[in-house]
Image 1 (cartoon, rainbow, N blue to C red):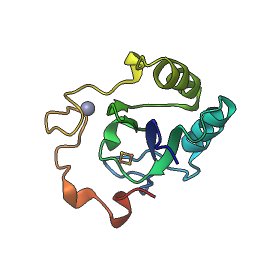
Image 2 (image 1 turned 90 degrees about the horizontal axis):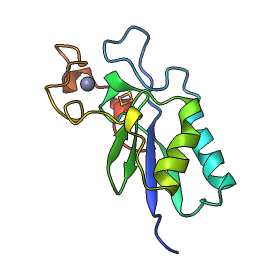
Image 3 (image 1 turned 180 degrees about the vertical axis):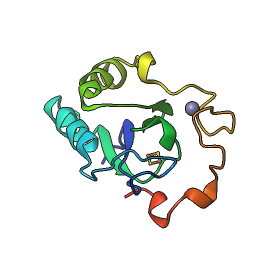
Length: 132
Ligand code: FES
Ligand SMILES: [Zn+2]
């Protein structure tokens, strides 16, 4: 079987209401992931592009988050209304959607101005890691 050309990892993590870092899918319905899956299938991309629900991607303050590999483009504040544009522009057209991309200063850096001051690994829960 050929390998997938692209992999979309969509955070489906939940945290309790009021948690300082928030979370990407408070209702736990995986609506973004399900919509990506549906729209990819509609475009005949099933088997070429995989949309996986993931655990916490550790960019919680910018959520709902997803990342697309192999190019490692990070998106934040993604809504259901953005799914078509991401698929058309990025997945099919090869042009990332600039307005939704996380800034380099935000991804995996302590310089991110959006993180709570005390945020560190102690704020993570056992459910926060790993890909489902
Ligand atoms: S809860 Fe989604 S990135 Fe952490
Ligand atoms: Zn930030």
